[in-house]
Length: 109
Image (cartoon, rainbow, N blue to C red):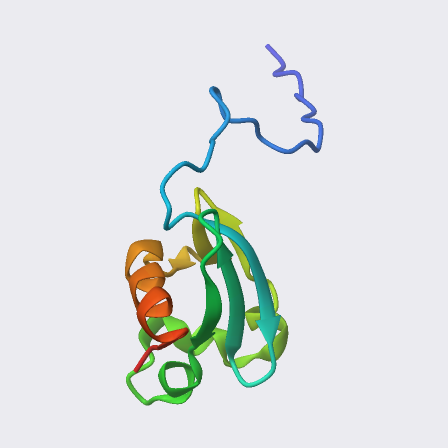
């Protein structure tokens, strides 16, 4: 008996129901900046800078060491309201929101 090959279409997966950002700390926009920094805006309008430079270049960078390559860092996107990179690297949006709301910037050591 021969197994038939199944061809899959290239398509974006759909969430059912679709994800709708509702928490004030859900990220709406993210833009990579030079020097391992990000410009972020949350759905409540809070906006500021996330500075990952110290973490990315640190000997204790852990998974963030993968972001030393500027092309990898630039692959940042938003998933479920969180700043995310390929490889399951993400940042806690609630902590980011609190720091940016208080100081305009979140420096991750």
